[in-house]
Every structure is written in structure tokens, then in C-alpha cells.
Image 1 (cartoon, rainbow, N blue to C red):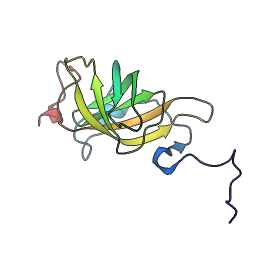
Image 2 (cartoon, one colour; image 1 turned 60 degrees about the vertical axis):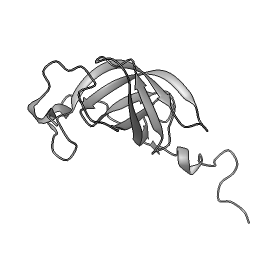
Image 3 (spheres, rainbow, N blue to C red; image 1 turned 90 degrees about the vertical axis):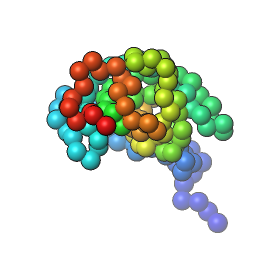
Image 4 (cartoon, rainbow, N blue to C red; image 1 turned 180 degrees about the vertical axis):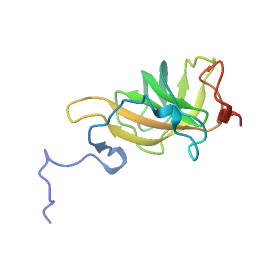
Length: 139
């Protein structure tokens, strides 16, 4: 049976597939969005180390957190990670590390080797070291 793709056109394995459309990373109004996401989202630039805990795809890389709330964050990352991958975030401003999971993976652009990862923390909190967090960050 012939596949609908040539070898060079074949999409990546389903577990690593990301959306391939440009993303507007202008998050200036993000802090006004609250509600179902569990707290005001705050734009930032926090360098951290992200460690994939998937034994089939071990990976450790420095990256930048660009949006935070107590439930998770958005991260600019140099590799796609499968939704559901468990990760450890290290070198956090509040100290220590936390465990989370990938809930979204979006390619930033067709020619960019950059992905936007949505991460959900296993244990929500102000791990970002925000000195005066918004009132809706209280858990």
C-alpha cells in the first residue's frame, strides 16, 4: 500500500507533532486574562533549565520562560516535546526545582528552530519568585 507522503514529506511521528503556524508572541495584554487558567498570567523573561524526564528522549537545555501563573508557564524551547512529557524545571528564581508536564507544543515558525511549550506544574505555586503576586494567585 502506498503512503500519501514521499519520504521527505512524511510528517514527524504523532508523538512529536506540533502545530506549524506562526505564533504572535506579543503577550503585553496577557496579564488581563484570568479565570479558567488559574490566575493572572504575567509576561516575563526568566532563564531556567528544562530537563525532559522521558527516558526515551532525555534532554537538558537552558530556555526562557515568557509567561507565568501559579499553575504553569509558557517556555521558548529549542526542541519539540510530546504533549504529556514529564519535565523538571531547574534554576527557578524562588530556588529549587519543580515537576510539570507538557500540555502544548507549538512551532514558532516554519524556518525557526524554536517551539513554544505550555507547561502545567504538578504542584501549583509562586515558584517564579514574583514578590507581590496578583490577588488571584492565592491558592
